[in-house]
Length: 156
Ligand code: FES
Ligand code: FES
Image 1 (cartoon, protein in one colour):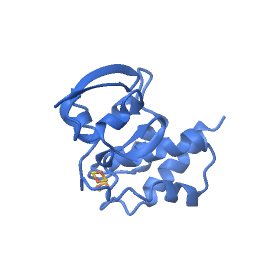
Image 2 (cartoon, protein in one colour):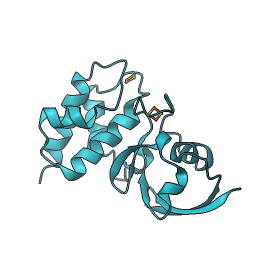
Image 3 (cartoon, rainbow, N blue to C red):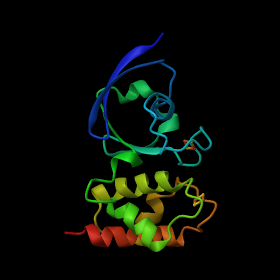
Image 4 (cartoon, rainbow, N blue to C red):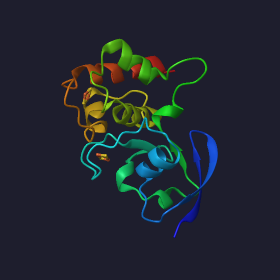
């Protein structure tokens, strides 16, 4: 039986009726139509479904939607503002950090999660932060360059 869920998604309060077995990923995509978050493996291996849950990157296919009750969720749709792209999105575009783009929302959310707590990451820390995000196209070099560039830009 569906149950009520209250949460904040991309700074907007949402109330939604969801089956108790729904994953956060399925709720975002199927109920809220936020399809920027991708469904790859649906079993925690690829990172394509990464979103921020209370500021922490999580693989949303492994999180029950009801675990997000009263929580704050940020998806890739919540990053850009009227002023433009988020610095991480901008850097991915400038540094060629994407090719087919399927992994890109997840990679960007992992990077944003890192930079929100560490403005000055080493390359090793960047690689560790995106260690759960699989990309079949880029070879990661340009992804890492993009995240390092975004970090440099974000530093006070
Ligand atoms: S879809 Fe969640 S980790 Fe692959
Ligand atoms: S850009 Fe294609 S999987 Fe990463």
